[in-house]
Image 1 (cartoon, helix red, strand yellow):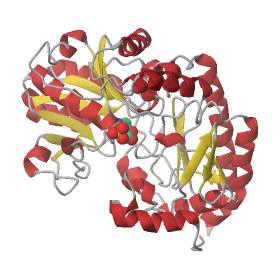
Image 2 (cartoon, protein in one colour):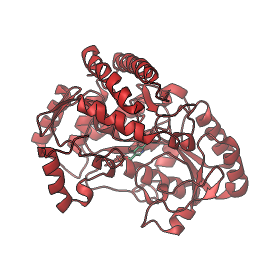
Image 3 (cartoon, helix red, strand yellow):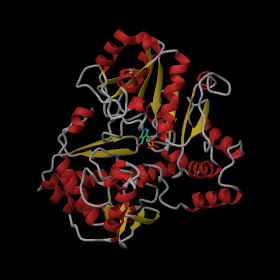
Image 4 (spheres, helix red, strand yellow):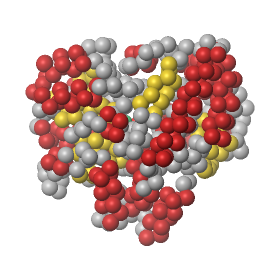
Length: 429
Ligand code: PLP
């Protein structure tokens, strides 16, 4: 890792004076891998350029939205045309109907949908709606699943057993955390025990469709078990597809395991890179929202015309061949990652869910947060910096999915693959 003064390091120092930690979202600060984040100036397709003139292959894709690659011609044109007509109406317009209809036509459990401005807003609103619909207070979430920075969902896990959660962040009150039960992911017995004790009070179970924020974990048949358990107890099932939606398959993770949630949350791809989220589901539940029902939910910029234009221009291009290409590119990467890390004797486990995958720097299997946390984060940091030095921009955390886009063609994948042997050597040291 080099510490020479660069334009990026100068900008980062400057940013720290006016922005807490220099960043507008914590992981961008490179805290877990060390060093200075490159300041990005431009992206096109699978490539990024920074303020120091470096070129990178992008494996982050803005944490998911850029499934078509950066500055896709059709998306840019749609946004430019929308911008010329007004940046915001704060009033109804046809684009928001088209986006709603596109999602409803694609994802069967979504009968109605409402747009918001981030994934966090989507899960926050879905929880309020679930509580308003059921008249119950408690929520079950799973350790290691991230649903945005909603107070009640920042609660941390107790180890191994159902436990009232402790606040996972300063500023979250005990009372808020007290209504959230955190269970180990995939633990059917813990779920049954929680319902046996608190069943009458549980408004909803919220889960990532496939966990991707502790690294990627395949749910197997866990979502189906959640569906049955929620039904037995009159609770709702909220499946968070903010990350997996329109990425794990054309129909999101619903297209992989077919488990129908009562409410589904979206973000990332649905906005094509604009700040967008959405939540949708059963019409009888969605119609409890204001102005029809008693559950208040609103947004000055919700359904913004640029955001809906970018989302529509993205979804309209996302047909089967895109997912086939992403799968092929991902398969090649997984194969080469395994071979490079094995050649250097670096313990690792590759997990897959739909088109999503990640590498854990530990011997497997990895099926929950405890196993994910057992990985060698120092080996990952060495691997990460060796990749960056060779022009590959990986997620700066060992607990993230790797994001492949339509623009990751053979030539791009070859560039990533050629960086792997040196990075695996670095991880082995
Ligand atoms: N839910 C999941 C599964 C996510 O991965 C994220 C963000 O990474 C969120 C919710 C929060 O979305 P946002 O960062 O847009 O608020």
